[in-house]
Image (tube, rainbow, N blue to C red):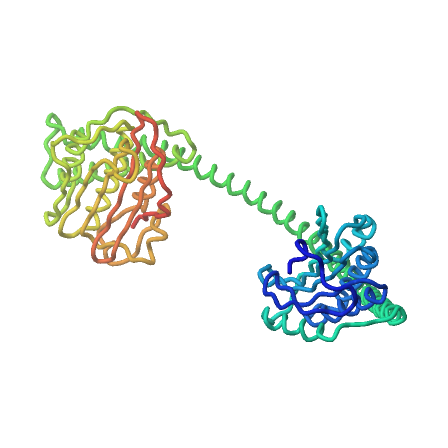
Length: 484
């Protein structure tokens, strides 16, 4: 029978078992005398132990119920019901005080109980109640198991006297004091361990600080040494650039004289030469042109490294440029088993860049390819670069030559480095071709990449932005091509 709609059961301390399944009630107890309150305390401890609450929670629950029972003692129809809320998460032991009329519970009593357990006070027009809820943490026990345990411990009632209650409270107090003492000793032990740990941490911190200071001193000394080395390398690089610039200027004058005098000897109005003399003069002129080209390349490299090589962007007619390169290179070819393929006279992509530097880049790449290709073809292709902006142009030089071994690819962009092997016989060079081409390409804001397979051929790609428009942002290809 619900407590808020009918008169509670008979007064007295005997526990009654609630057979109705609603609200999860297990048993109820009428409170009429102080002995009934003592019995409530005992029943509360037994119920708490049955549902696997620890000793501290048992004492808290029993104390809270005892105080609430004393406060409500004398109210008409006062009854305490023990129940199990299996639907709660987690499950909970629920103890409900129900009474009719009477004064409201003392605020001090409610506050004291609320410090120990969860307390809800419901004041009604006729029936009032206090609901005490204690969450359960029993692992592996079902609601049926817990209910059976409660029925068993609450079956015989728990009559008690004031002396029994005092003895029980004394035992609880002694147990609490003993537990407090054990906790205090454990806390002291933990404090000692913490102090020892702190001393170790401070010692380690001091040691690490000293090591760090020593390391910092070493790093500062190393940084100073590296800074000195950097200045030395900068001075050496500047000296090398000055040397290249000066020697190139000094070489250009006599080379120009050799080329000019050779041209005079071969001119139509000059005295006739024998066939042997003409061949020798032709050889002198050819060597002079080669040496002059080398001197010009050296001077351009020196200017580029020093930042003194000026760029003069202008619209480039790629059709005329390709025709000029084709005639220039094929006229100097020394064998007939290689075909030079250049783009035809069809419409070519628009490009604004330094035409002189572009010619030097492509001439070096094509000359290098022709030099190391005995048979097959050397091909020059041009297209709008699909990987970048529509305003960048991709030049690709491929050959069917000797290729470059994989272990040499990491070095052929070094100035003056040449891959050694039988393919070098009869092919003199300085090792400046690819480094020079890459230097000029980067000066124009582009990039040069190379892939090669020994015995198959080499492929060089030059990406150049259109300097007449906003420069395209180029992804880092991570690759590098290298001179042979």
